[in-house]
Image (spheres, rainbow, N blue to C red):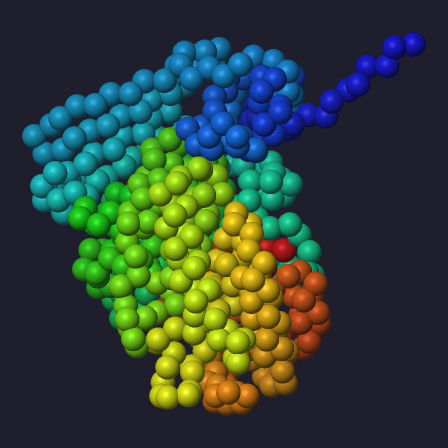
Length: 494
């Protein structure tokens, strides 16, 4: 008897009768064989313009039509079809109007449905739909069909969310993270976007401050969409990503304006640049233009080295750019971005202080011999950035320093006391003035550097569990900032 190997399906996708278009990661070996669909439906696919020849997994756009039911995608079938195919035809139109340049994209499905996205770029200050737009800003609108992929992604399951890199592999959180996610489910609907076309995708905080995507709101919302199975959060994540591109970018530097009393009042700086959410939203929604925008932002970030010296030298100006550039390099070969990331990693490594087992920056030198450690940034930002860099560029000495720093941080977190230590001062051999916080996003951010086993061990402590319980409060005046910082934490989704 001849035995025939039956290969498992790459994806199982629920259809509800409406045309569907979304981006997914698939194994390179499967993509090389072409793709086919089993079930009542049609499939058309293409590679997304990202990843290069050696990418694995490969990000592809799937376009599907069919009646309500379940279809399965297998390797071994038709090749890519970037133009007119069995499911849809693409159309791109550009026109110049007196007050705007209009870029229209349409996806004409062969069942008669049309998905449409229209972007208006305003070369000069103008009023559009009764709202003032500054020179260089844009307004993007899409019809309901274009948003349909959000629901499908939220039904595809945890495994694909992990394979896409959006969610971490489960483990370490246990009952604590389960309870925290249940709390988040009740809180996120309280997050109100700013009004009007110009405010959509952005949020405010106390004191009349516009957040401008502070801490990467689109990434946080995307995590929530897949971690909680809430399609509306994925739509909000896309609005936040589009807002970044349409409203927040400085035409001179290519960097976004940071938070402030208006969208475009702050001074752009590398310590306030986040592109991970923009990139991942572009991948999941198969949006070439968001991917292009992420690449442009990576280029602008690579061209903007840290500027501060002495007490103006800030950890965030080194670590945020490194983390974001490594997120870009994880999916896209980019020699310019790679060199910039390598320079940042070397600069951070030079700041190693063996006596304190940490990386020191000028902003922490409060007086000779006394260093103020911003522990929440060390655990939530610096160590994850260096870990991400070491995946791409292994370095034994740097890895040993990261491990030593992580061990010292774990010791500090595990020390007795209520709350979690977010700041402390130290001299050689002594730690004092420890500041602890409970139920704040900074306290939660502190835990993001920890491996799952260490996280699980810490969460068995009642004091640690209490410090990350039922936060943030739905009536927090800085809900947008607190919720974003918490929901971007990978440990929350373990």
